[in-house]
Length: 407
Image (tube, rainbow, N blue to C red; front, side, top):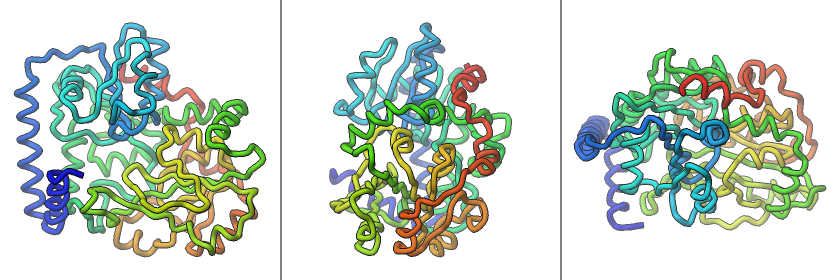
């Protein structure tokens, strides 16, 4: 990491302990950055037929932005598309560049800014850099990246953060949400939480399902695709595949490396020694996090592009406070929750929207040995009642419905 980035990381960490100073600094920096952006690109005309797509700051080409892109590239030949990637070394750079009517730009470059200054539509699943000033004739479609279990944005009442104060965090959410024209939602429950946490009006919500789940529904019985994904990861077809997909922790932050870290807590003898080689374990870290530790038993699939592929090949899901279980529940396969730090997370970090003792589609474990016994049993129930509440629109056609709403 450069000295400049390390200095910025250090300053953010120091400001996070002072609400007033952090808020003032963010206010000044954000407004100055937007003013510079506006002046620099005010003469650039907006192309109403150009759409820019971004997924996790260019790390992936997946989620709802990809589903919407797939639908549009097949049905709207009159449009042009721009994909944001984080590097020219990205595994999908050449493939996207060769697609019809599609160009690729690198995240946080001058070309990146120009595309956002001139695209008629912005489609993303994460918050965008604050400097991007949206003109009145541009539309911002926020897909987000999951149904929330843990509290978001303005709904967070507890917590101490490594890179922002509570006041600074609330201001940051407000800056991004003030640009939204549409916000995608998979359910009434999610719509209510998005409106309160981002302070957006109900008229901005498109509650028609998650495009990201279209491929999950449509490929559920696609054995040839499932076999291809397993072969790509060198997984024998006869193995029981267990996916562990935890979320990030707000306080697990490295100032030195300017990133959040997460070391797999199931990488311990009490857990892994309970299983023979008929089980294969996958580890999917949150896109915020990194880990330097080598795994003895888990295949690290954190950089695998599309998590839906991992869902399709997995017989069992282990998670904690991540939203992944809302989507995985569509497959009606066992889900277990490993919440070894539950008390801290609930009372000091975020808090939850749901009553986790009654509303989750699976059992909670705080002990890895008890968790291993449950995983070995493979016992689980169908999630039909859960899906009726939290996934009521998922029929594999959400992308088509949503496009007709905003385009």
